[in-house]
Length: 256
Image (cartoon, rainbow, N blue to C red; front, side, top):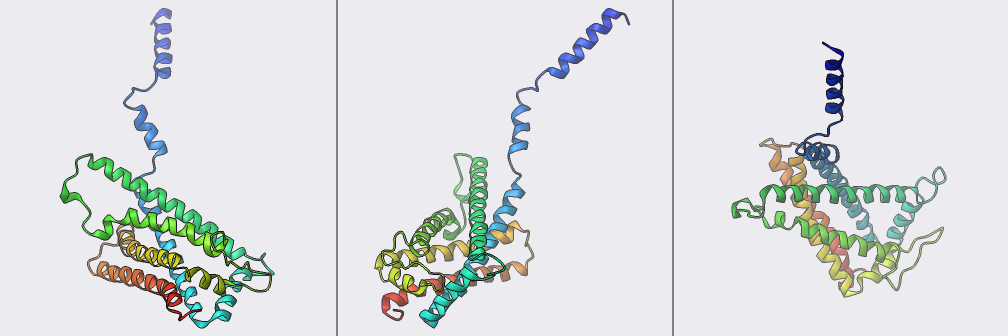
């Protein structure tokens, strides 16, 4: 091989190394770098959904203390503020839970909406009626999710910060007024109605959400799936029934 031939060959190698990838390969590679796999989205939705279901269940158990009276409920609310003190600063547990739940909500919304978007994109504009969700609850998952998101914001502004509760009493270093704030809120028919409606949405979301968690986690056994379905229905109904019983009891004068 002559020196001229070697020079031509080297120039060809350099040009090949510097040449951009064909157009059809570029977007495909970029998608692989920035788009999470479907299994990642399903796992994220399942894990965050489990965390949120666990939180509302524990929150429901705590809400039951309202039926024990003002002292019991206020003592419970104050304990949540100071648990771990003086080893940890006051309200450490509350802020840890708030950050974890906020992150879980954000990730849950992101994963579920992206799953929904990809599914709609794959089905295309024309979707056969046979491909529609099989139950009303499943078709309303997006709607109930939006209702719950709005409810969370209202609930925080009402019973945590007091911005929309004119009778709100701020906690002190030694006591809490959670019971008084709750009664003042639910004595307003509008807020009691919003809470009841939101709990019905929570029941529907929990029932179908727990069923989807089973699917996402690969629980496909013929025996365990009916059990899981019964657990989902039971948890959704119990959590909603206990929570909505509180504003109903306030409106009926049972709690005052």
